[in-house]
Length: 309
Image 1 (tube, rainbow, N blue to C red):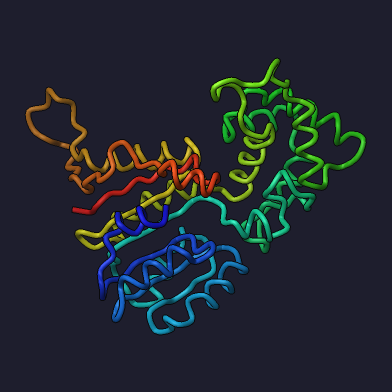
Image 2 (cartoon, rainbow, N blue to C red):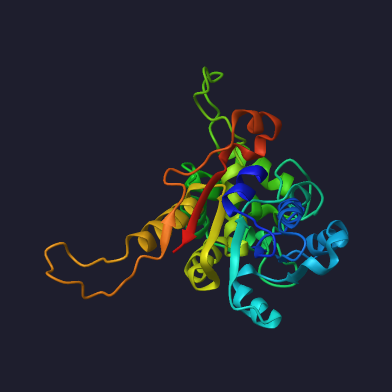
């Protein structure tokens, strides 16, 4: 949803914007086009390959952008390095980039035979393969249920434990095959869009990626720090791709928009909480049918935006 994202950010010449997840740098380039000649784009990504790619793509805007490799939860640190107290917009696209799926070789896709890594930053943290081969059956089941909302979590966990007893599960294609064996097939071909329409391994791979990269904790942190980092009138725009992320973003915006949380029968406010946001997208914004047709990866996208008062 590039056009929608840029529109909700309200990019203006001379202002400062942050792209928390550079990915393929498409959003960053679109922002830069709108903030010239004196604006600044701050780009962040944990993936070294994404940084190198962005440097090449954004080179024509040399004095108008700064790139940082690291988790976007370090944004206050990066701003301090630049001597910046506040920004006019923050964009966080929380989905995988096409490069990570098709070119990283880290096992993000269940359609490819790659090592089970799934780390955004390959210099730190545990891999998906380590989780799959070391967690207990109960721990795997809980991970798939809590992070993937997978209804067959127990069956899948049991099949994984049986398979790894013979030999370690080392590749994405091998894991996908194990999951497929564990998930019951629909009794007949789905009609009119009913039944399971996604690959059986989709939710398992999502759950592992979330766990490996601490994605939910990262969303919590950016939603916590954004109000302090935005200038008055500045906007936050977040693109989520599953209900767990969206729930965090939606509830945080709602809480900060409300302000006072005192019981209604209190004569005066004692919590002293002030309204912080103006919610710009109460029901969220979904991609158009045309975009989903052109890019099926966009089908689960939810865009939410808020403006600091």
